[in-house]
Amino acid sequence: MSKIKVAVLGFGHLGKWHCQKVTAHSEIVDFVAIVEKFPAGQAAAKAAHPTVRVVSDVSEVINEIDAAIVVTPTSTHFELVTYLLNHNKHVFCEKPLCSNDAEASQLRGLAASKDVVIQVGHSERFHKAWESLRESLQSLPTPYSVRITRVAPFKGRATDVDVVQDLAIHDLDLLLYLFKQRPTSISARGLKIRTSKWDHAIIDLSLEDNCQAVVTVGRNATREVRELEVVSKSGTMTVDLFANKILNAGPGTFGDGSFVQEAAYPKRDHLLIEHDHFYRSIRDQVPAVVTYRDGFNAVHLVDCALKSLDLMAPVAVKFLE
Ligand SMILES: NC(=O)c1ccc[n+]([C@@H]2O[C@H](COP(=O)([O-])OP(=O)(O)OC[C@H]3O[C@@H](n4cnc5c(N)ncnc54)[C@H](O)[C@@H]3O)[C@@H](O)[C@H]2O)c1
Image (cartoon, rainbow, N blue to C red; front, side, top):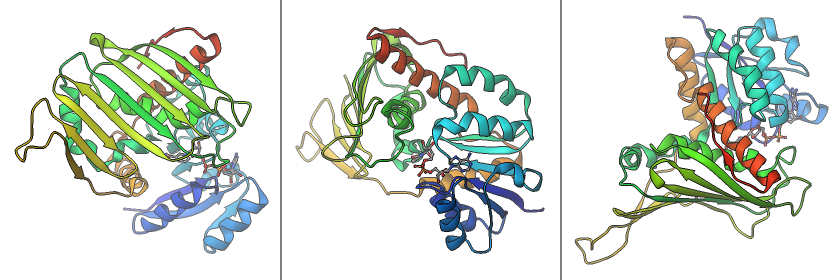
């Protein structure tokens, strides 16, 4: 079987890592090009990958590739993904798939009409912890309460978008992936601290069956916290996504007399796993591990949160997928 001809679009912070994963799959992938718009990035790409062609626009290599990995700023995803799909290319697009519902509604029909793999980079789905926890989270007694926190000191990245599009999208997607009850309405509050966009946001979600969730995201914090906690009649469970630990406080006492149990789970290379899935989906003609429908649903929750932030009022969630 011939190799899959791939280009990576964007040689910035994350694009560099994507290029490494393409190289790591050289037995099945032919790394055709790095597409980087700006000279500094082009020079860095040439230095890091001297045998790979570096061009400034995807149109220069569109007839030479089977698939593209989109790792450009979020504000460019819609235009690039539309272009790639119009040329019948397989697409692995970093999250978010597009910027808002308006773009999603234009992309939806095109995505559905194409017989190609469209995978979205919701990388937080690939924590090893979910392999053992997802089934029990899907059958939690209701009502339950979820708290997800993702805050970090300012890194100066992703300032083309606000913190909801950049960070909360991970957690809004996790809510849809991990729990059975879907959000029905969203009420969000936020602060613009360092940029002209939302730098801190608290997103309250009402879920079906009287369940609730709150997602807190911030990019001007004093320390890095990535944590999911769920409280129900079965007890409390906290997953520390930064330290890769699971803590449990059951409704009773554990065998050793303690009230809280802690276990570590192994860290994995999420990006490598995502690349494995993408190439396998293309080769074996099976659906993407994270589909464009998942991508649109996450974008819809982001859109609702942003509307609520602007209106300072609750917004109803209406999934189309
Ligand atoms: N899954 C995750 O955990 C995760 C983590 C970080 C970033 N991301 C996503 O990855 C994307 C890129 O983030 P980043 O931090 O690498 O950004 P970045 O700004 O560091 O890099 C983007 C690169 O794309 C280049 N570029 C811009 N427009 C282009 C175009 N039309 N064609 C080719 N190159 C173009 C820029 O010059 C830049 O080098 C964002 O959408 C972000 O949300 C995902």
